[in-house]
Image (cartoon, rainbow, N blue to C red; front, side, top):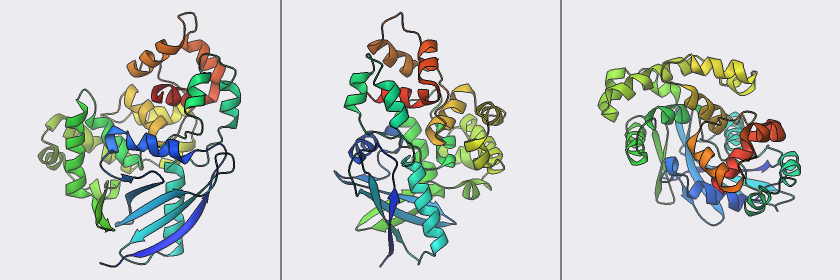
Length: 295
């Protein structure tokens, strides 16, 4: 089937190295088989207004003067509004508007962290593509081995998501809240073969379907966190995970996360505490933790 295509460019705040984003995405376990990552491009699919649309992003600038180019693939023509919505989602997904200069200015004065900064120079956070995807994943991965959680996620993708074939490769897009809102807890259980997680999935989908994502992105952190914690199936860990890795809320740190504790102990001496680092990095503590864990 012949596809329609739209192209455009995305402005990118400095400092940016798309190769770092590609390397991160290539090794990111929750989505590793849901996109194609080459040396220069990322191709993935997304649901928009009931349609599955694939997008390809390629570098179009330099580390200090960055720009990105995108191509959209669709089975029906896209109007200007849909193209704009997709371009905004791609930009948010790849954190293209995150200005790293203030974070780098602080981090370069941290002698323990400076080698990490040099190694990952230009890395931006690559988020989960949608709030629905990270919310469901936060349920599936709780107290569960990664391969089993991925199998459950794959079952949701195949039963409820969309697909589109581009250049011989079929890309699957995670379903939206609108697609999942009518699914019962029993049907979720039949899909993922786990009644407890299915009940939590149902609660999370129903609650977040009614919660404004813009509020979660922009409200004072404690208000956004309280709204998430009020949802059955979302605890303290999931709240921080969703705010940080799904919504780009970098201003807080979940210091009790074991992977972060392990990474922190590898490069800092005992006399440097996480509380001290939280104060030092301030609103950029989320980027500090993202770099630290990826190092």
